Length: 221
Picture 1: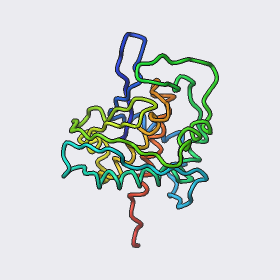
Picture 2: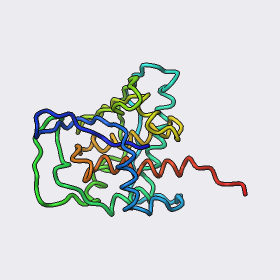
Picture 3: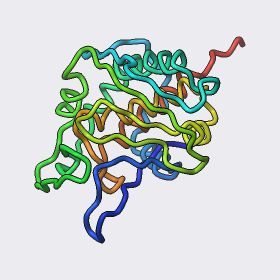
Picture 4: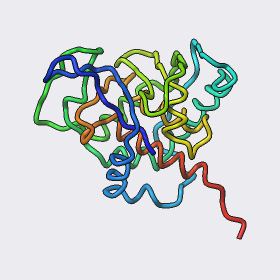
């Protein structure tokens, strides 16, 4: 199962910028069908771009389940995913609808025919070499929203049970790292669209498949 995100409806035709993530294995699997390179063995090669994510202010509803130490490990893993050649190559090969651009939760977004190139997305993600993010961990529920992040802010709110249920095949530090990669796209100014042409969603999917491969132990045979 994998991360995908719904937006909260403000009016019939206007969507908010705030992220509300739910399970969507169908969307993830469909993405994989057109990006089969994600199935190839993981490479240890680093990309040409680099960012280091760090934990700033940290609040958690249950330090036994998701502590600041685990969050720190997740930030290291998220940085490894983002800095991998595999991640950067995958994003560079994509393009997205212009309406992914946004400046605030609930703000108006401009729709243009021009597309956002993958290189532009990469430039946004690696604009700053060192990024500190404030994290809040809430309980959540299985099948519910994974988290919420307003664009151009440094605060990520995450729901523990939602994340752990959505990616049960990954240890919590890796599942949380995937979630962080997705939410990081919001912090640099990308909001959700229609799930078919979505920057943050596809970044989350790419991060997920890399995380799965990171978690696969080599066979001893």
